[in-house]
Image (cartoon, rainbow over all chains, first blue to last red; front, side, top):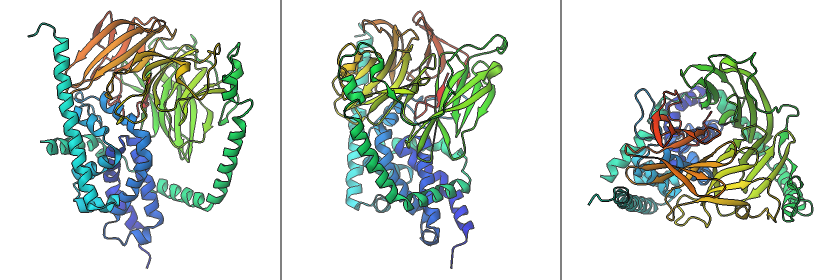
Length: 178
Length: 395
């Protein structure tokens, strides 16, 4: 029996923003995230009689979107890193916060390799378990754990270097401070 | 600690998306139909692509840009060829100020920002929206560049596997005077692009490097840039293009030799210019910092091509940002225009006057730098102007 089409509309309404947010955090570009999310939902629409019967149709859409980010990721990483470096941290009153705040952490995140960034976003933003991340990324659980550990290690290292850089910079910019 | 920071950071990043408008289901249905059509025609597409590649290979032999450019030429015209894409004839006009009859005494600088899929024209002094422009059906605007007359803008729209460039003209009061399609390229994403002050030249990045199009003549010249990517294009008149060139991957441990802010004389033909090598054709102005951190970049060049402003970032927990002024002729720094630190604020260079005496910047707040001092300016530039793609705003 075909699944009523309204089911898809409801599912789409409920999950669209979540998928866009997830993809935006990975590719770093809201427009591209919307494009990817729409493509993933369009594919779900064409297969809705099947996808609609899954326990978690959103997981299917997420998986498709993740595959699409691999293509997009290479193109967008530089733009992401640049804009992460340039974005403002503190929005003025009444302004909407920029999706990429200019903290050292945001820059370090932007510089993670895409596979690591994917698992970081799925783990810390989507709050998925490593088993679910493994399913979405189509890799083993141990690979997810390895990528998460590598990402954490890299972030800690880069933040530590950033601290050193800041200290050096302060010393250079304030001659005679000692 | 890091775990908490990550959760908080990511949540902050995507918070604005919670207010995002959900596209109508019809958009998905159109996509689904296009996808079905694409799949059905896959074999034909493959055949066409193979044929196109064969043609391109043949075209790259005698008479191609590469061979023409590899020989010293007396003038610049020899290496210009028919521009790629599908063109609308007779739509281009040079940039120029408003006529007296059309101008309004209250005319302020106007900026164009991409909001969702549409382009919004706003009075920079009051923040009042004066006009909006919608993209053609099935497309969305995804980038904008401004000419030097405060009324001519080039909009890039994407959709259905193509990128189109449209020219938008304003009349007095920031109202739309005209919108005209210039040309369409087969591409899925909008490249970085910039229009010259007189609106005669459009430069845009390609997967291989850079292409410059003469809009009136519909001719083009290309440069390839292996090993790196171009960004932050800025025109100095109709001859010099300033841009940032750096490693293709921001995770690269080492930047390619010669990375930094570079200047390209698009007419230079007095010596061999191998089309396969961008770097010899462009001049390094400001070297990237030695590490893989982002440093010199975001150049803005004066309309006469004599002066280049660039930002220098020192990345740390609190970003330090300096704006520096360079002589385009000597490549030497003329002055550290301003040093702004603290608050996690980086600076984006927005505009300079033709003499290079004033520079409009966004350093957490919008302001004007003159005589080495930053003064906040009450400009109603859009929130989040330092957007992800860097092309959602122009003035």
